[in-house]
Image 1 (cartoon, helix red, strand yellow):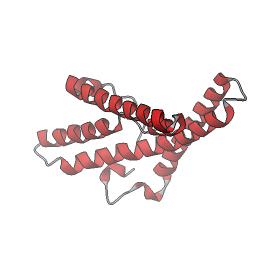
Image 2 (cartoon, one colour):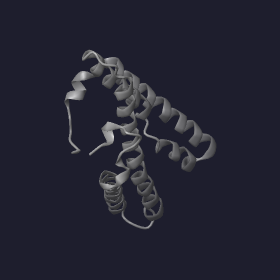
Image 3 (cartoon, helix red, strand yellow):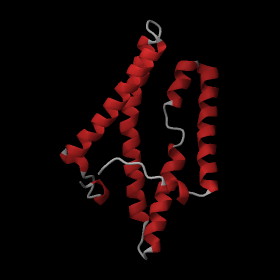
Image 4 (cartoon, helix red, strand yellow):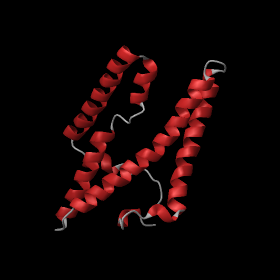
Length: 152
């Protein structure tokens, strides 16, 4: 599987789907702000590490895949769930890189130039996220429960 940009998905989504993503992102951000106000910015910042758009995105991915299969006369429920699980796995891989990003910023921003720390932390995030993706791709664990979408 090659990582690529597919702009056709932007044309497939309806305005209400974008509104739903915006709503979920806003609600999660407000919740993080309220938690930060009560328990401090460190705890609130942890909540912002949760991809604000993830809940809406994963439901929309599932819906789109299901609709695509049903247009072909097939039951798309399983395919939709598989596509959503692949997106969730990718989010988890990226989140591990974000954890390293946060640790590097936290440890080094006070004693170094901000732009250097940000650049280094971003490079570390990219290397870890892509590295984990490559490990998953080349390992024997890429096949989960017979899920065809995970097969090489």
